[in-house]
Structures are given as C-alpha cells and as structure tokens.
Length: 319
Image (cartoon, rainbow, N blue to C red; front, side, top):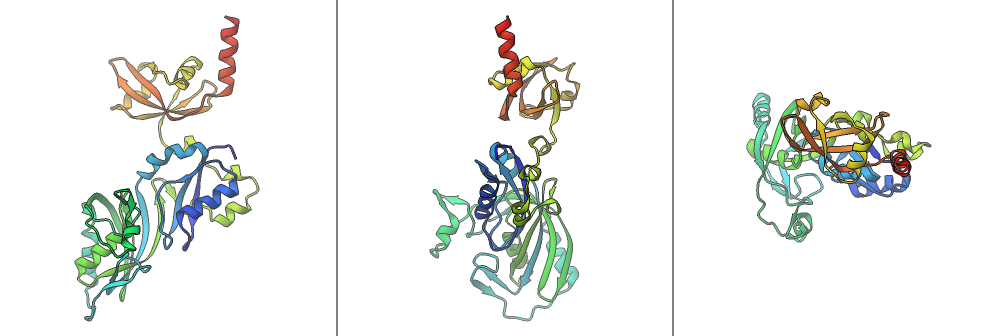
C-alpha cells in the first residue's frame, strides 16, 4: 500500500504495541508503520497507527492529550504498579473508608503536578530502557516529570475496587497515578485494568479491531487522510508558490490576501496547503511575520503533485 494516512486500532489485551502495529503493516503491505503512544501488553484500547509517510506526524500526535478508563484495587502494591508484577507492599489491616473521602482524595490529583515514572517503563537511562534495569532487581532514582491531570469523572467504588475515567497530558503514567492514590489513601493500590478511550479528538468507538482490518477487502477505506488529522488553517496557493515550497524555499504571502492567517499570533504555527484545484499538498510552517506579510516554509510532510511538476516543465520548455 502506497497511500499515506492513519488507522485507529482497538488493541486487545495481551499483545504488545510493537506486535500489534507490525501485524497491520504486514496486512496492509505498508512500507512504513508507526504509532502515537505505547500501550502495555495488559492495557487495551485506542492506538493511532500511522501508515507510510504519515509516520512523519509521530511527534505531533504523541503530544496529544489522552483519556483512559481505569480500574484499581486497594490493599497492595506491586513493583510494576499493575497486576503483572510482584507484590511489594500489602496492607494487613481492615480496609474501612468513607466513599466521600475516597473521592476527595482521587479528585485532589486533578491539576498540574510532578510525577515519578515507574521503574517498569520504556524510558531510557544511559541508553538502556528502565524495565531492562528493573528486571535485574535494580531500582534507580527517577526524576519527577511535570504532568497534568485535566479531569477525573465517573468514580465508582465497590469494596476494594475503584474505577474512573481520567483525561491526562502526554507522558502521564496511569500506573503511577494509581500507585500515588493508594499511597495517599494509606491502603496501597494497584492498577488492574486500563483502556485508552481517547487521543485528542480521536475516539475508541471509531477504532477497528485487528480482525476487522484483516477482513476488509479494500484497505484504503480504513485510512484517514492526512488533512483530516489536524485542524490547521487552510490556505490555497498558486502553482508557482507550490513549486517553491516543494523545493524547500521560503514563500512570502500577503496578509491582506490570506486574512485567516491574521488569527495566528506566533511563528511555528502550521498551515494546511492546498493547490488551486483544491488538492491537499501538505503542511507548511510560519517562520516569520512582517507588517503586511507572512513567510512560510514546507514542513516535514509535503508532496508536490505530479501534475504541477508536469505543468511547470511544459511552461518552462515553451518559454
């Protein structure tokens, strides 16, 4: 498959993210494959799978906010902070609580905060993944990272089991959040289930199981086009400007002609570039503003339409 785009995958429990996307790569016959955020084998739910040149959007998509459905159990903690690990702390008293107080503790985690990543994570220290170090029984000091919990909703409490939905910034470890909740409650806690339900505007309800992808006869129908991934301001430029952009040149646009750009107030903002016949060509980035002009340059994803190339070749030959 030569077409670029993304597929929303509903990853099942028990398979690694790496294996899941490589199954899709083989099934689609794609040349390149990537994803916007790892899910542990025990976790399930939404993954954004990028196909071919759409992998260039990896960094942008990885930074998007995410939502999860979480289940946790009170009374113990494991070395992995989930049920895949060994119990390291056990609360041997009677777990008694007031539901209102439990909810107040959970809600107290909403907002900006520092979070320490779990030892069993893919973060690297001196070129080695931390989970490789942890498997040898070594625990190293981890620096806290700033994360944000945007919202927590639909908290359900039944005996030792608690569930809720949580929306978080990129880089947040839900296992660590569960562990921290347990610490604050003084009962300890371990994550027992995790389902990613949203990444930015993309929802699990729109995702395909691998079996559905496999059965689809026309694979192109599964792909979401690049221009539908981001909500960039849209600009239509001339063939001359398209050719310059495709060659890596800076193009000067008149702000009076592109009035929508007046809504943008900083450099590095991105624009969706379209040809005069309304065909999506790629992404451009604003690099400079002047009093009446804006300077743009192509971004990572930019394809020069073959018809435009042919048109220019013929024009120059006639000239």
